[in-house]
Image 1 (cartoon, helix red, strand yellow):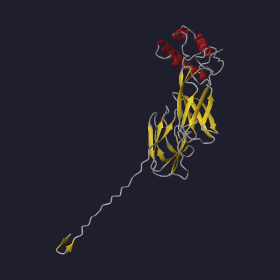
Image 2 (cartoon, helix red, strand yellow):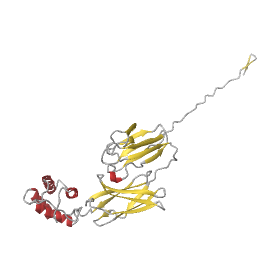
Image 3 (cartoon, rainbow, N blue to C red):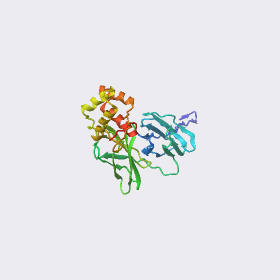
Image 4 (cartoon, rainbow, N blue to C red):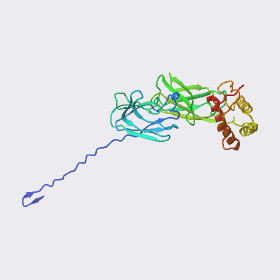
Length: 316
């Protein structure tokens, strides 16, 4: 542009915006499985070893029936204060974002045998969790049946251990087994029910492939049709609960339930004291059972518990 001999050159200023992105990683989840409170379960956090990046968030979900904690440190030396979840009740979660690299070993203050590790961008090469698909040969089992549990891993790890454990729906462990994947990503193992299994109950079969594995589950029934008890047993319970039938006579009814497989006995026979004594509070439950307040399954479960724990013993 010219004017009065003056040349005017327009200058265009370009504003350059530099946009920085804050990377946010998706939450990783660690499950506290059903039965984790029992030391014999063998799997307490799933996965129990996990590799993540700085800035990642892990959410622990408590699928067990009792409370747990996530506390960094070791059972021998105590907590180190880096992470303290406090009580995580059943069905609840706890989340923590890892802003610093390092190895975070943690355990449960209530059940100190439960331990886990989080690797946050350490020198160890990251590995993704291994998932399992599992199935059983049947869905309903009877006394004397073996349970075959089979499955396949999403990734083959030579000589890795698959841990299989079974709990009732309340988290009480009743069986566990271990099998190694030596040549393929598939596995199969057999579990034999013991006296801990209660007829009429539903059970949860769990499996995990190594420390970096996640849990797979499937449900089965045990003796689902075995609770059709003869009416005279309930009549006997009614008479016993009102004092018309002695403890000794009612013990005969329990013997019958054992012989018929309705109640699974931990031994071939039991010996009572000379008075065939059965705790008085059991009569209250028998009354509720007769009245229909307590189900057949619940009453049988109680008798099974009393026998297994040795609170009552029945003579041959």
